Image (cartoon, rainbow, N blue to C red; front, top):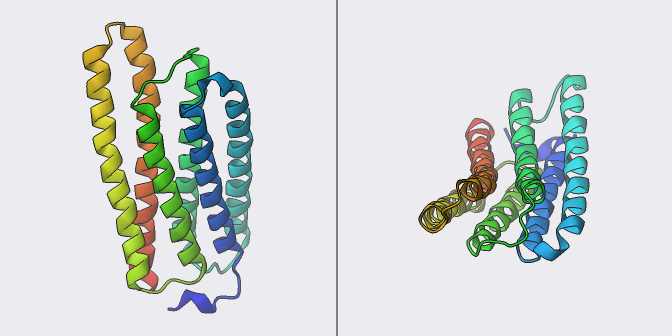
Length: 208
């Protein structure tokens, strides 16, 4: 089945928009990681981005329910939409914890992790654009999904190194707990990018 012939492109547009929102959240968090002095402004922007993501998710989920025949399996659409929204939610959650815990100075290993998140979300944007143009079992689409897997693996290394450094250097248990929660949420956000690649791969196998 060639999905490029489907006339209803609204679902693809919504998924692509959700990916753009996740990427925007990652970029804003990356800005924050280099500018704790402007924390309040970055948090405000992230809250607005997260709200935009929620609106898109709600719109897509409602359309899935209200549409008799969808261009992709309804459950696949729901899974993909939820994973995209989860990325944005995790990014915002990580940033909010910096504010809640009153952390005024970044650790050096935060920025590289968030830069990896930006990379992963940018690849997700590209993958959703390919999905929007129609599923074809092409080398470019498969390579894009593989690049997301690679980005996740690379961030796994950064995550482990960050935790190792945190546990070895810090002596205050509360300080360790705060930063571990932040790192955990960045890691989950990148993991969700890989989930998106896995779901896209299953869709590729099913429809291409």
